[in-house]
Structures are given as C-alpha cells and as structure tokens.
Amino acid sequence: MSEYRERVIAQERERRERLNAQYAQEPWGRLAIACGFDPYDTESMAREAFAAAAARIEALEARERVLVALLQTCAEHFDGESDVSDGAYGEPVPNEAMSLLSEINRALGTE
Image (cartoon, rainbow, N blue to C red; front, side, top):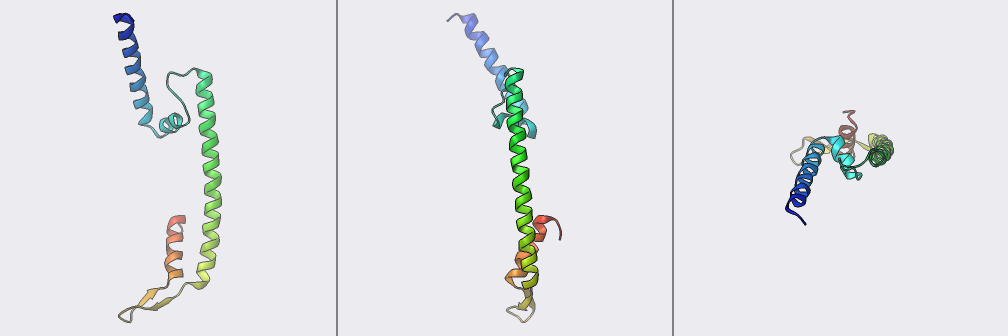
C-alpha cells in the first residue's frame, strides 16, 4: 500500500473517531451509537439506527409504565400495613411496611 493511501486511511480513521467522540458526548448520540449508528453511515442506515433507538425508547417507556403501576399497587398494600413500633430506647420507629412505603413514595416522587 502506498504511503499516500496509508495517510488517507489514517486521516479517515481519526475523523471517524472524532465524530464518534462528539456523538458520545450527547445522550441522543450515545443512544444512536448503542443502536448501531456510525456518523459515517449513509442516510438510510442512519434512519434505521434512529428507528431502532425510537423502538428502544418506546419499550423502555412501556416498561416504566408497568413498573410505576406495580409500585403504586405495592404502595396501596403497604399503606394499610404501615405503623410504628417501639425502638431500642422506647421512641417510635417505622415498621418495615412503613419504611418500604416511604421508599416507594420517594421513587414515585409522591413523598
């Protein structure tokens, strides 16, 4: 391989690495790269990668809705069981159900 061709290949590799580093700095860029996008790709390949990213986001949002519903159900259950008990020095401390309810409410942002 000629010296000129090697230099061109090295320059292209450096340019690709710079572009990937720039994309990796942004959340959308990291997602695109994780879904197979390369800044050197053609437009159709970029569309495919972004379609895959959109599908991934939709799946994560669906999973989040299910998990939130499950946490709300757990919160309703623990709400009826939450109470305090006497601590080591006689002061009231939350029972396990109250502690779990507090953590669930904090995760749901309803505390």
